Image (cartoon, rainbow, N blue to C red; front, side):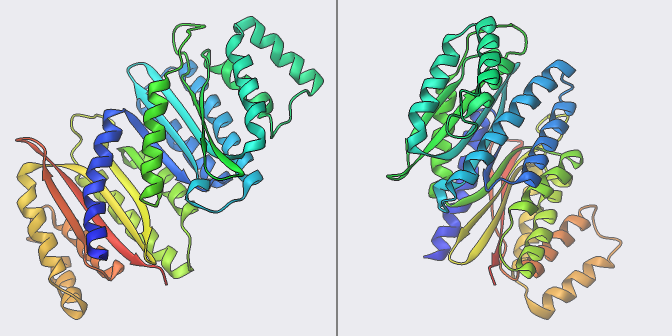
Length: 374
């Protein structure tokens, strides 16, 4: 049964990657939020904005709205404190053409739904000048609660985005609901009236899949050395379990992400290699999974390496590692081969993989390492 689950998750990685590519999802973070994770997400986005060579105005607008979204997640997370799949916050950033789409999701008390609904509807009914006056009014009177009514944060988000706010509530339990907030910063046309409800619907659907698959966190985006440190900081902040398990997981994550950065195929993306990374949990095991493009001509060699490594264990695997380490006449992919061996040794489990042909030039490589939670 467990083997069937693992195989399904390998297939699921490519399916999820295709969905996220289709919807132009830059990356998704799902999990518990704290200041360290929030800072890492902001740093990662700032790095990507720099790579995209966006103007200072665009950077400032996108960044400031992200801050409001992330603070909103953390604020309500502290209020609810319910531990379940549905309690994890979610943050999504997309770019389609010249537009950025920013979405946050968090658990809220159902008692707050009427206040939040009334506030957003009022915000969406106001023009730019009216919104500015309303902000000043609320600021001076303290009319809205900073928590239950979402307060000035939502008003400020609408002002900074220059667009209406899209939102949705989804029942979770008798007491709690999930609150999705979706905004599109206006980058060129001031006062542009735009809130993409279809885009929000797609994100709600993807979030449901993540909950069903018990995916603790997921990143989909462009991997490069510049973004790797911010990404690792975010992942490290999410890891749970005993210290020895966390250390083992972190080492494996580093090796797997470096594999995307160094050996993935860019698909003509000048800022890095597109890929997917996710952590899921099942039956007291963590499953660390990466997915990325590789050139079809490299498939046979890669498959041979993985099958060789999986055929060895214990002392035989150590000896094979040492042989490869000193084999300076080996091919240029020797380091990649060493990384795969090291993954098998550190995870102490067979490496599961899948190679799917996409066209006459490219294939998609899914690699999964299993780590026992001890």
